[in-house]
Image 1 (cartoon, rainbow, N blue to C red):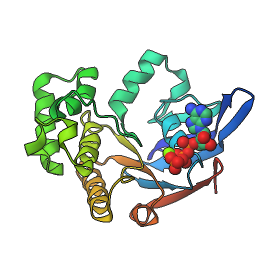
Image 2 (image 1 turned 180 degrees about the vertical axis):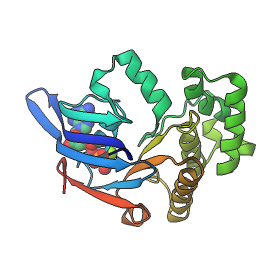
Image 3 (image 1 turned 60 degrees about the horizontal axis):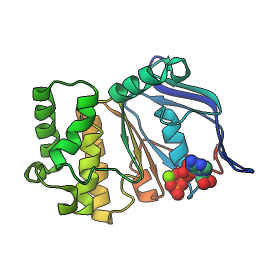
Image 4 (image 1 turned 30 degrees about the vertical axis):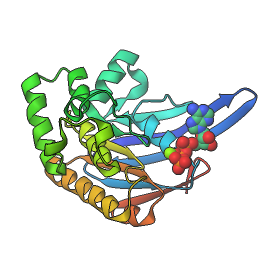
Length: 224
Ligand SMILES: Nc1ncnc2c1ncn2[C@@H]1O[C@H](COP(=O)(O)OP(=O)(O)OP(=O)(O)O)[C@@H](O)[C@H]1O
Ligand SMILES: [Mg+2]
């Protein structure tokens, strides 16, 4: 049990839309080991994003338990939860949200500011991470001046600025061609080697999933 960093048990999530009830997740349980690279695969609407958002504490489950690094997320106040999340989890959104009016370096820096990382430390980490993903010469650009693949790499290093133990990536290669997708997966592997980060990615792409240590299949909100 001591090597388990993420443990979810009987997790359900129900959305109510007027009279409609959507069962986005129906009783998911998984344990993820420290340093594991896990892929969550399933068709559109199967509950992949919901699962990642519950693990990150971005959404609250309708029932069930999420334990991250031994902490039951349910026991944290909203303020403590967002602080815990900021320090422990890096999240790459399916539709990554870089701020269009901020230069790349500032976009990457923002989560570090929320985590009260010192300015000098933030600058050092930005330089180091930008070098890893080959964005050093784009840091003073605005997102509109970058390619899709460059924006995606920026979203990834932004999720790493606080050196999280856990990296959750929702369709991180969704908008990329196969060469760029392969480069992103290599980047994840490098991150794991370098920092021991536990990584979970949600993906439609079987070739991407094949690079993970373990694949979890999800259908209609259930792990199969
Ligand atoms: N905020 C919400 N309100 C209502 N229903 C939602 C909400 N978010 C997701 N759903 C529904 O929950 C189900 C699971 O959605 P989810 O986004 O987790 O799927 P997904 O596997 O990530 O799909 P995709 O591959 O298209 O990204 C879908 O039927 C979706 O319509
Ligand atoms: Mg999704």
